Length: 150
Image (cartoon, rainbow, N blue to C red; front, side, top):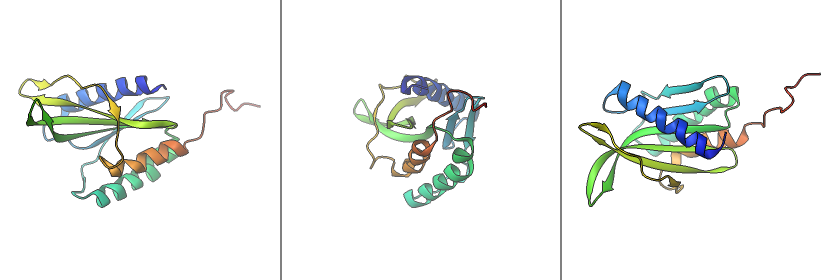
C-alpha cells in the first residue's frame, strides 16, 4: 500500500469514527490488512506519554506483529490553533514500513468533521508514543510475492 492510499484509508476511518462514536473521540488504531481494515478503539487511554507508549507497545506486540501489519493509522481528538484561535480537532497520524509518519487534522464543528489539512511529516516530539506503532510496522516482514507455495 502506498502512503497516499494509507492516508485515504485512515481519513475515511476517522470520518467513520467521528460519525459513529460521537464525542469525545476514543483514541483509535487503524490497521489496513489484506483481508480487511481493523479498527481498534483504545478505551483505557492513559493521560501521560509513558503510559501511552506502554499501551501502544502492548498493542503492537499483541495485535500488529501477529498479523504482520506493515502500516497503521492513529486517530484522536485534540486541540490545535486554527485561524488564530484554539479549536477542537481530530488528529490522524499514519505511518508504514519504510515511510516517515505523517499527520493531519480536521476541525470538529457543530456540523461535524471539517476538511483535513494537507498532511505533513510528523515531528517525533509531537506524538512520541506512536514510535511503538512505527517500530512494529518497520519490523513487519515483506509479503511473499510468490505466495509461498512449493
